Length: 121
Ligand code: HEC
Image 1 (cartoon, protein in one colour):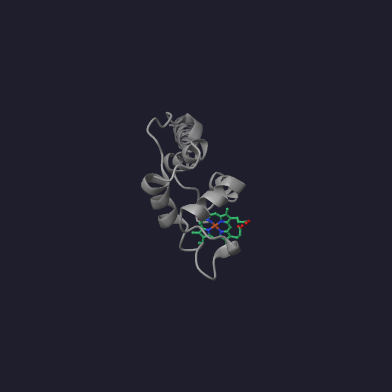
Image 2 (tube, helix red, strand yellow):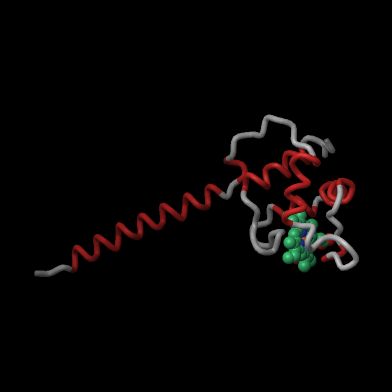
């Protein structure tokens, strides 16, 4: 019995399934696909925990990377107003943190904080 057509069909199904999964993963990475945030986003409640967990280890103190200080409201606001912070967080090919882009839900909070005018608390 010739099994070749079956093997071919199974391979094709596997390929279609794989392509489908890959597409879904990419879609989840898109901040614009998320529902809008309706409640107010503030530095103290929402932004500080993200920055302190993901950025301050490399961006504070005398040996801060790129000389960029990200501890405290004033420093984070200055970096966000200047534009680099938002660009690098959302930059898929050269992200901050360097280990990989934060989840879209997390990046959306930063974007919203900027859009709302950098509320502190
Ligand atoms: C593991 C260390 C590390 C972590 C964690 C990290 N950074 Fe960086 N960051 C660097 C290094 C190294 C550079 C300089 C090289 C470059 O620009 O890629 C840099 C550069 C930057 C720059 C560009 C500064 C400039 O003036 O060119 C920004 C903005 C930035 N980081 C923001 C962030 C933010 C926001 C986070 C957290 C979401 C973060 N970084 C987390 C190491 C880190």
